[in-house]
Length: 256
Length: 266
Image (cartoon, rainbow over all chains, first blue to last red; front, top):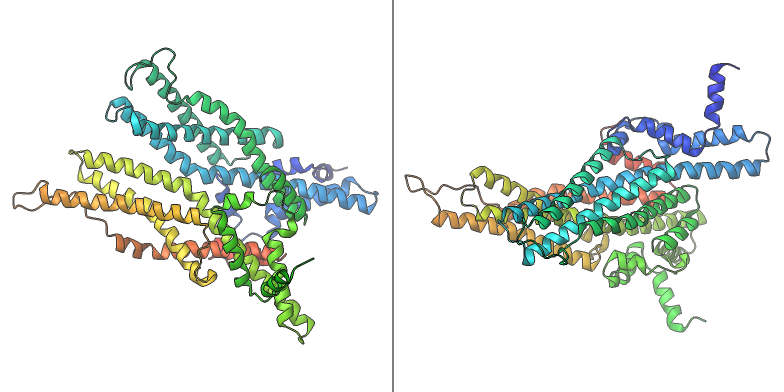
């Protein structure tokens, strides 16, 4: 058997996950999902992942099930196509979510960072409405950023063998946001403890907002968030294979 | 057993055009206030009662009732067109609400940030013309996005929904409120400039040293019209893509998507 043939056969026996990971490695040459989509401009539909991967799956299943009953082959092809489509939709879901929320999260961060600076500088007193508003912005930032980060990490571990589904630039932006959010949260607690934002709090007096607690709670919301993205990707995949009712079942059971 | 009233209502529903059927549904759906509350109302509801199942059924009935003594092919074509129209309108409502909701947090935070910066600027006696120019641009950017949404919604209200907004009432109210806040920020900026013109520094010839030019709100709305129209057009195309997908016309959906994303591609 020639090397070429052996490689072809190896290609033929790819699992949906392996095929998607291989596609993902190629796609991740582009900085973001929109850049990747732009690269498909003018290309034949057969290059598009939702055409190419189902075709790969079909040929892989057919070659590994030679001699089996057509009904069994058909069912296996259907499952493999659906699994591959699910993983592709999961990639678009995760990237879409991070990109959509990126601007809001960055703006939220600026609000929190600038507010904290003003409190430490003393240009805004650490009290009343200003304090309440800042606590709201800070809680929303920590909660949103760590929920999203945890959800992506969960999906990477569960479905992509630890590889992030995020395109490099998008992953970088999220990582940066996590770092600055954690830093701001630490600065807040330290400034409070050192009395930089007003008189030092008394021993048992809780801070106006405990951002560490918000972060802990985000770990739990991350799983819920991941589940939502997974469900939506599964629904898309089921819809692609014509199983609309099953898709709606999932949405109803897990999201509504 | 269905009552007389039910039967009469069924008859009325069956005589509806796609737009009328969707408007009837929209009126009912809007009673929930928000998309979220409306979606939540589907918990435990059988699929047979989902709008994308019910309304196409109603308009099919209406087409059949209106096209007696017509060749079956023509009826089938008319039914398909009516169902596509319903799917398009339903997806248009969905797309408008979901996209606005998707942008919402960022738009509000941007306005909050601009408000905070504007407050600092107006209290800062040492602020330079460059600081004013920057704050002015940022305030315009924050207001522009909200105003674009207003324009985009206006574009479809008359054309597709007979004067009804596709946006759920609570969200529509929140948008109006945020536009009001944005206009307040711009007006405050203009008023501060007026104040400076009256009481601020003057040059040797007695002329006012204006740190920035005021923001022309009406002019801004006019300038934003093309962007608002384009936003509406984009959402309309996306709703058409979804409607084609719903009809199983994948190639048409892909064609629409390509024409929108890559208009220059051959």
